[in-house]
Length: 332
Image (cartoon, rainbow, N blue to C red; front, top):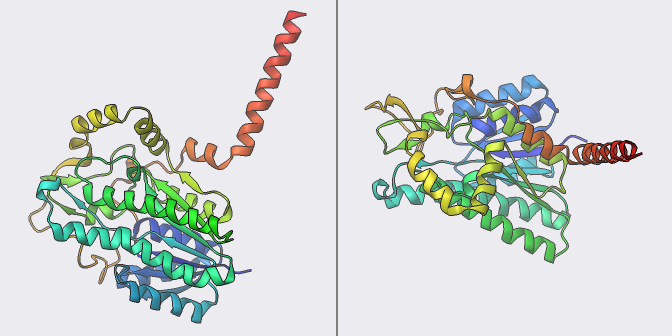
């Protein structure tokens, strides 16, 4: 059966890579974003790969617009099977240099956009008692870092929202699935588009991963609806676990390294534009990839291990059994 998938933030970055991945599967893919040129290019790629696209230009900060988009998707494609909340925006700068309006805008897009998308999906999935909602989280939903208070705050809010809603769905014995995928620093368009209050061009915190790795992880979760959470990349696992074990040490380390690790040596251009209020791909498609391709990892042993738990457990058991047998034979 053909899947119907909704992706917010689908015109660029991770959302664009996810859209292409579902296009390869022949899915019906609803592409939600603000950038018209990026949306059209994404639609062309989904169509070329064998999928059926639907372009909907929408700002996810507008709850009514998201609701209308959901209605249009079901009128066009039928029931929504998967809804992926990926849209985000951010401001890179210290709290003291960031305006209240900038905090508001990032919160409305990144956090409330996720809430709006989830609520629109629930209105349709709950009566049918089926469907899968995926929230795109971040390692920074578990460990805030300097210069990213707008983004970290929004992702922490998504984490709390996800935990609360999972409890509610479980209380009602609902068969609607809810998962979260925690992502690392990615070579996406974000770092060329983010608003900055720092002297140099921004970059993801190394190690840097490809958006395609994130896309494959998200698609994997749609195939494994029982999986509540997936961490992507060794850096994500280390960030989350390190903060659990020694948050004071993480704080000290980030205070010393977090400013430099998020900036290149290239000064910010005086005429730099950002996507906070208006899309940068409204008239020109900018793809899904950022400028750090040579540094970006497209594979992760941690992701393989996390998505092959059964095989890994079997390997560990077999290794343990072999070691026990070898020890016993040596004693004889």
